[in-house]
Image 1 (cartoon, rainbow, N blue to C red):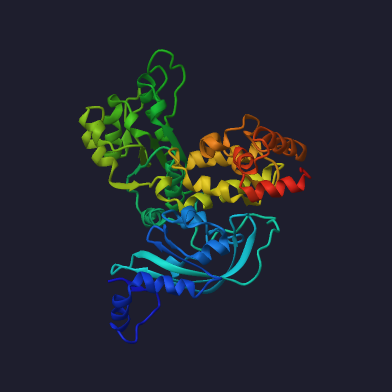
Image 2 (image 1 turned 90 degrees about the horizontal axis):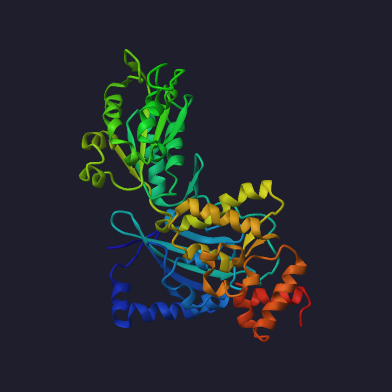
Length: 463
């Protein structure tokens, strides 16, 4: 039995009986038609759109085919607050003012009304939202990036509104008073080093050193010396003593990234370090005490390495005292827009360009991409788009080719956004010539919507 956020029924059963006779679908459709000027839509627990009213099509310009079955952020894009007002968190929204982008890139002022639904365990399972226009659509551009929403959390360089990531943030805080060994698991590019640095920054070791080691880069012949250090004369060429990376992290934290690649020959020494906090540098006569916290990171589970004989089972069990699994970006799609903003901020501060808005088709491309390289790939895509384009708006044709799709790549000369007005005019003229004056095809070849193409064509006086 689902619960409705902040709503109580005065006569239980009466409404259910009525709906069973007329049909809940019919009743809901009749309700949406009583609000012809408002947008009414329904989302599930993953915020995918289940219903999109005729009024929603009229108000925001997106068709049902554009949005149903997809993340609501494709169509509900807030102009000045980014990502909305948090109905899942608060349960209800009553007249919240917003400015939403329309499909034609203009924006319209609205007031939002919404109710959330929860299951018996308190989990969000969906909601109904009504957007009531309070003014006409405006084509005025935005001069600065939107602000992050209240439910977005910035945590030691990590930014997320995803529940799984925010639980990880809380787990890190809970671990602050311990020295437990932690194993971070996640695909490449999910931010494992950032999480390790957050663990260090939250712990009592925050004033000590943080040392990151790429185990995949350690050759078997040098790994022991790199990690544990050596004394003078320990081997041929050891003319001077060397303090190992583990001893360099004394009093702090060491991250063993890609720990599955650690040579088997020294895994026993690492196990002793974990058990005893003692180690012996190469060529030394006695052990050295070290006070270091170990955080290990792996791109895949270690059990397969254990089964293949490449990794010690006892070391695996010791490393995974506290396992943390980082979700890939494709499972936290609401963070794509958040992270895009975060990555643009320092670029705006340093570079000659100042991006203040993202074209709707560009944002849809970002939201639809599967991001196999996760947050690292997203950062690269944002930096690419910023570098190749000019002006305050980030356009679809400025994104890397793999995000634009085959249509946007159809015109070789339009691979990136024009660096100035003259080049933009020339690109539009070439597109019209190449397509025989067919506006829809020319706009598609340049990766623009028809309204954007018409606006730019008018701006440059192209007939």
